[in-house]
Image (cartoon, rainbow, N blue to C red; front, top):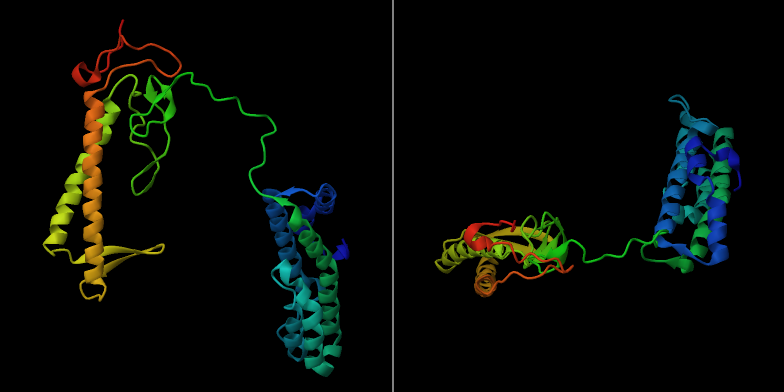
Length: 308
């Protein structure tokens, strides 16, 4: 890089190995997006550090230097905050110098002009190199150097709530997330319950969740139908707002909420009935890895007890 005298300890640290890394990527015509973004961040950190150091390095004006203070900062502030704007310097610097007129001949301002010019000479080649790299960016995760062990069915069972094959701990489903109706849920209700091959208790647990929700939604529907709701949540894009009676949208929002609540209740009723059939028809079966647990008692009657 040009003009190493502009470096700071922070920029030296961030730019260490940068040119070699860019050269290798250009030679291979390949760089992963995560690595490209890391380079951009390191470059940004280095540029920030060197830009901030320029005024002190060339001699920042004091409170009594009124005759050249304003012109000095007008020049120094031409160094941009983003590398992508570094090419504005050749256009703007002559304009500022021309506007300053005789003041631009002050030794301190002349030094500032030289420093800004050298910052451009130092950083423009880096911008050009990063732009050259763009066509070679490969998106996606970096492959593991050591492949992960293939997942097996050993010590796994079927989650009673999302029906996925999940690892077990003491025959109970371990932590995992899932999708339930309106959106992402951080932890599936089946976590901590016995696998479906062993017991139906997880299904009963999910059924109980739906029954409680049905009770709440039914009460809310009654309030909507009786027009006793004063505010209604309304999702507008990513923003959730409360629409009150004094809002001109209240009637239409209420009708929409009424329709959606009725649909949700119907869906809950269907799910509760379906889960009831699963519970009624449940029978123990082999776990996915072939392990037998037929000697276990039905948890719906006597609680989980493994056979001796």
